[in-house]
Image 1 (cartoon, rainbow, N blue to C red):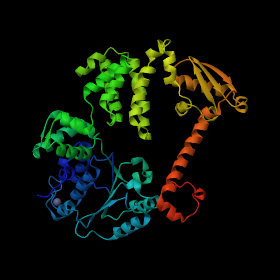
Image 2: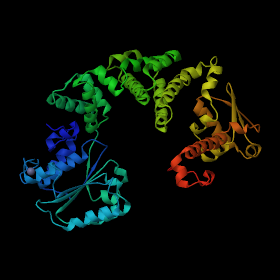
Image 3: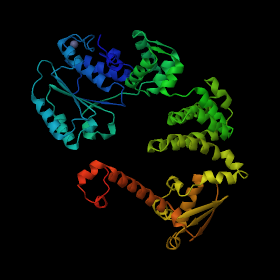
Image 4: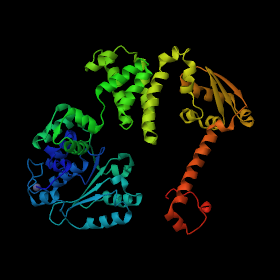
Length: 491
Ligand SMILES: [Zn+2]
């Protein structure tokens, strides 16, 4: 028996097998049974939810010589079989990600005038159509304006916003939605039973959750899990494979944050591990906070683990959620994810509205946490001019007093509006009232400007050093002095 990956083996072959896209499917079936055929269809939606699968089914239905119930492809006639086997002459599939240039498009469009060889329609399916170059789009547009009656275009895209409005207006748009966790779980259960794979309900739920609305992802994750678990899926193992933390870790974490118990938070993190998915842990914590907030609103909790939290101050929950949200973006910047997580959780304690109130004793300790000038510079919310002024300042803080030191020439031109803007940005960032002082006693090595320049220098120095070490590079430049070679991103 030949081996087929799950996602391919369980790809739907007719409309009734499509999962989680009921609206789109019934609209398409209606258009076929009522013979209301469009000459261009645009399938939109995120990845892995069935855009090209549905387009293929539609193509089969349009060319099928033996439709079932006037709308379902028979999967038995010559046309259906050739499409299923990927051998249909009148169904042309193109991936615009790899063939996006004008020459490719021209070659393709030249074939349009020829009649279909054996079917009713000649059908072109262009996947990732947003990748086409503007010239290709224009060439396509001409054909969309007056398509020959035997031609049907199908476009699929994950990036609807990148498609020209003139193209969109000539297509019937079929918008596919992300598939719910419940629907994915049900589908997985059905497939696993047919594949004789053992599982417990929770393990399926974990896979469905990790798939984030994509059936294809759910199946490829399943593939991995099935082979690791030796065809017997248990919650604990699936959790380990997918790196999904135990629910107790998250509830303990939230409890420790609310108790402001930093030692406990750090110990939970140490046990959780340096190499786990830290972004996922923060997201799970935010999910829990959200669940608590909703339960408070509904005045009851759906899950047992929420009961302990229902009396939490709602403002505090909003604050924690907001802080988590604003720190999520840091994970994509390539810094050490464990540090980002740690700092985010520490901020949740240090800057919480309560600890702001009772912080007079802790002030000294918090000073270190609160302001790491010039590192916090980029986090301040400032307009362009104020930002440029502040870029040249060094800053010292003592309790609620903040001293801003500028070079003399800058200090003399700062106006009141700019001062207000700067002061507000610090108060917003530190979430507390401050008293501000200005002088010209700047330490040039402690300004954002200095840090920016030197970061850049350090990077260039490193790249140059590596280039000098690289033998191939020295051969290519044939003994030229490295100093004369400009920093080249591609090398
Ligand atoms: Zn057929």
